[in-house]
Image 1 (cartoon, rainbow, N blue to C red):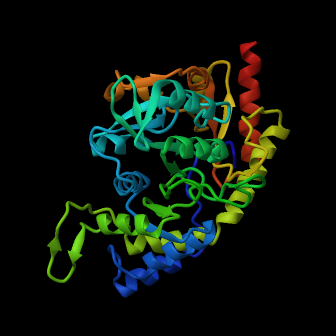
Image 2 (image 1 turned 180 degrees about the vertical axis):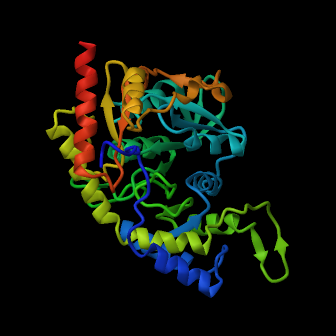
Length: 383
């Protein structure tokens, strides 16, 4: 089996009730942005992550945009963001007319809490319970924390920093649905539920998928409802089409939500499979980057530090195995060149070395063994 087909990097696993629920939505002719599957999906996500309320939306990116607006981030503000992440985590800052300040990562690939604190202490000042950047005089209104590949950022430290400096924390948990803390202050708390607001993604390569789509959660139901309002074109009166603000067409469809419900039923089994395959890679001698010991990670993506990143990617492709490098650092990309950065060091090292290996929840053990064997073969040839 392994020799005759491509082993994909990360693809959906649609072997549950997806067809049954999608058929039900189609037969009921509720396929657009209204229908019972949407509210059911919202309710079940909220229940799963133990959040008061959840709001379905068009994508994780849309969710971040809505959340920033609900948090009161305004044009001219500055928002602290990681540079080692997918660009969709940062673009919504620009949608609003604010500017990012790029922060380094630690060895978990998530935002370096030490440098975040150092930046706030040395480069900023508090004035009337708002943090201002000394060099620009602009308000720093929020921090976007990304839980990379299912790892969790140091939220204990980050939330403490946010309290001291009056910062709103928006969790980009688009890669971390199901990841939670096992001990400490946030024991049994899920990614996305620790900051002021959190966002999940259901893109095709995520641990569960709706084909596209996202979900916003918040400990403050008023903020969540503000997002719901904005996501439906800001209808003040839906019958008579009264709109007193500019809104967005950011609502999830009932058809997508039908898929999401079926996927959510399988989430824990997907996590179990991903954890098992992660351990199998390691048992085959592949030293993958670790996940934090005090968390239960969804183990979404597997990261390998290669001696020759591009060479390994080419070698695997020649043997019908998909892999990829980690994202190019956002502050080096054309739209963000010239933006402010703070002591970015480790992100460069990880960018230059990481190769993501196949990690789908339908990945077979024999496929893991094949990939592991190819990685070892390539690395041996490089000695």
